[in-house]
Amino acid sequence: MTISRREFVGLAGGIAVWLAASPAELKSASTSTDTQPFRALSPEQARTFEAFAAQVIPSEPGSPGAREANVVRFADNALSSFASDQRAAFLKALAVLPAGFATMPSARQVAAMRAMDKSKHEAFEILRAPVLAGMFANPEYGGNANKAGWRLIGFEDRFSWQPPFGFYDTPAEIARRD
Image 1 (cartoon, one colour):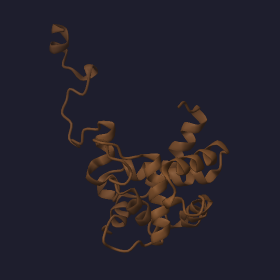
Image 2 (spheres, rainbow, N blue to C red; image 1 turned 135 degrees about the horizontal axis):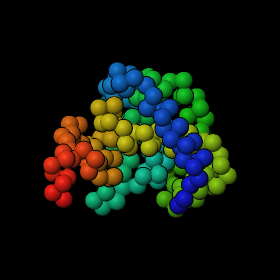
Image 3 (tube, rainbow, N blue to C red; image 1 turned 90 degrees about the vertical axis):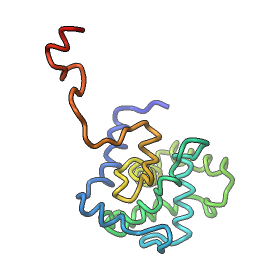
């Protein structure tokens, strides 16, 4: 799939909205656990969004998906805290999905999502942005559980890097030997 520069910027902007909160806001939003009730979503809305998220980033053998990354909890926490101003738009977008979406066979879910995407319905991007943010955000913000998203893309979680960082940072005496 190729996307235009304009679509990429729009997608990045959508994700940025979900990650624009301060680290303190993000950390405070990550306090719920799987056993606590949802704060912004009803159980049915959470099931519907989880089904949507699982189609955006599906689980495969040896490859975690949105479910394993706890994307639904990330979105619920965000919608009840730093992204509460986006809750109405999110719920409206969720309502665009067909009734019973969570229990539909996978092929019907994909068909419904493709129809939304093909028609450029804004609901698709409104729902996809928190999936991507929850999949790849710093785990301490409530998504990306067990660093599932980072493992998926091969990100090495060191948070402390030592020089040389690349060829441009190699000391001159070492560079001359090469």
